[in-house]
Image (cartoon, rainbow, N blue to C red; front, side, top):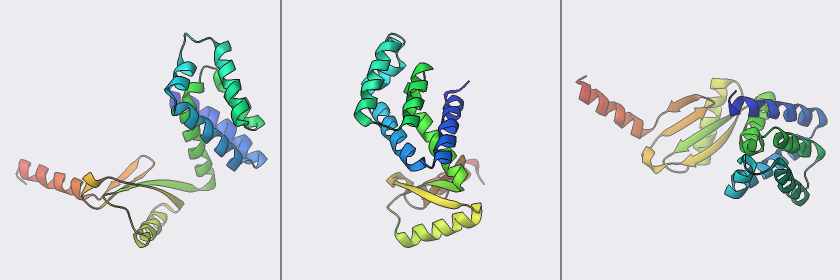
Length: 181
């Protein structure tokens, strides 16, 4: 079974609890903090993924982190369950799946938008309206810039990519010239 499938199962369980108890924002904050802590530290990631480090020692490290951050009961239980099942080093993946599940249940689609230069608010608004028309869902944006695009925009919605970049258009022209079209 893939790590993503396993992470999704944990994420679904904690998402169910978060929604049922009205704790989505709190649990999101707590999961994000632990995901960043573990993914941001080679030492922590190595400790939790190492077969050499005993479960007892891993438990001591986790309990020290729990004491320091002081998450709620449900997050503590999830973290301890991940440790018990040798999955704590996948915390970032669990958090990513948790965000996806919460967004799915709220009818929110996350659009990853890459442009050559920062997009102004008017263009962001037009893109948002167009994507909402296209998908019928509320769209949240995550913007980043990549000067190698030259111009245009690349938008990823889940596994679908809409590539309107100048770079891609130039590559297509180059391919057509090579093939003699």
